[in-house]
Image 1: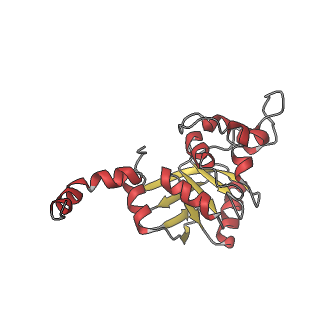
Image 2: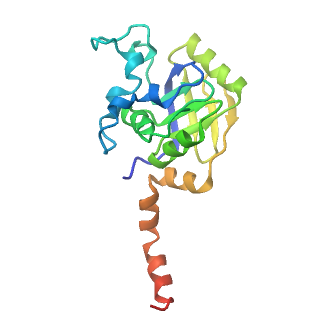
Image 3: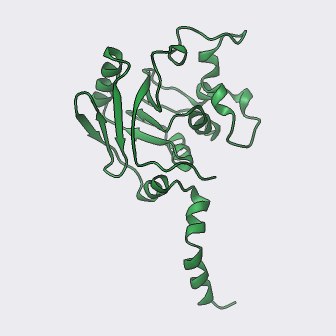
Length: 198
């Protein structure tokens, strides 16, 4: 399933300064019945966003209209817990294209990279600066430059850099999933196959 290309994203951000956010909070297990990637955004952080009677919890940041954007800024160890792909699907389906944290669980990071959500790991100090910038002005913009692997707090110009696997970087820049990448290589694969004995 292809997704939108990602090169440079400049957006406001939603702050979630909570450490050890696990995948069961990101998308509770009772919502894992579907096999397509659509519709999971409605239940992203369901138990934190809504009361048992489905009314929004006013104190949760997603329900505060002053915060919006395509970037989610989370605390340390974001995406821990089970390996469910649905957590990344929910993040993407809600509208986020990037999650920023000072540390990601490896499987969650991989699941994000597979579907076009860019996990940007920054230093603890830089993460703190982002949270402070958003707290002082919810309209603060963050710029994510994937080609340069740079993240910038636009108002101050303060910048940090992040690592990404070169294969995944190429895929996200082009909007490819793994199947798209192989399909792109079809002429090369066919040419190689012609040189192999049956």
